[in-house]
Length: 313
Image 1 (spheres, rainbow, N blue to C red):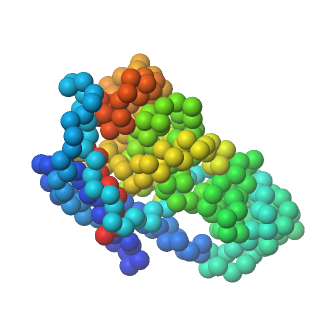
Image 2 (image 1 turned 60 degrees about the vertical axis):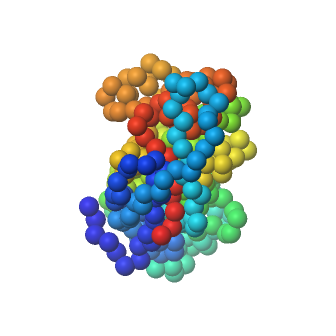
Image 3 (image 1 turned 120 degrees about the vertical axis):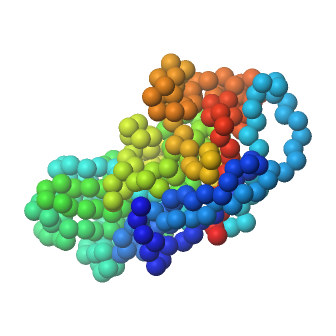
């Protein structure tokens, strides 16, 4: 477990069901300046909050409906670090005038056209430009960045280790979730299935925020983790699902559920048998078409879990 660092922001997770004890969760509140290192996971408190009285669910009695926690009083600023590329291949950047900066914020190169950035002997380099081992690509406000043919929100960190180039996308959690929903589930599926997918994706992301795959990034962009294609996989229904469930995650006994999911029941059962609870995406669609709400769908696939709300402390 990494020690607390001076600039950590504390997040409070408010748990809904009665009977769960207070616990500590490992979350990350990265620094927001492009010249700064991403922070390691921080200790945060989990507070018990009884669920509010609710009307009886309209679903059959056998269905478990997860109570909804109180809305967040203040939302946390959480930044995901998604590895987009790692290897000896250079990356093609389309910057639209974005600035390539040193770690301390000094300008290295201001590009107005496409730029190929490679890595050799611990140095990043572009045609006629030799650089340091680390650079940040900071876009103009409101503009995306194009890397390797895909457009992304947020900013890019480029790292050179030997001859290996690593490209990491830093972006707000909810922008990441909106893209994952569109990449993992067809946007024409029922809204309640998309909401269930958003919460499962957010829980999975938070688990990897607490337990990153690498010191420099939390998780990758492929289905080895969960699919993410930046703006290319965003859609209006996906953004709506992320917005409607903003900050909601699955929790169990005071910890974050690494909410696995798979395309169909067979794959879901295989994952459940070896890795724990897993949601069938086709099953979520079917339940939504039968009128189940997202918290009933999640209650079906993650027995014993509860919904928790991320909140700034």
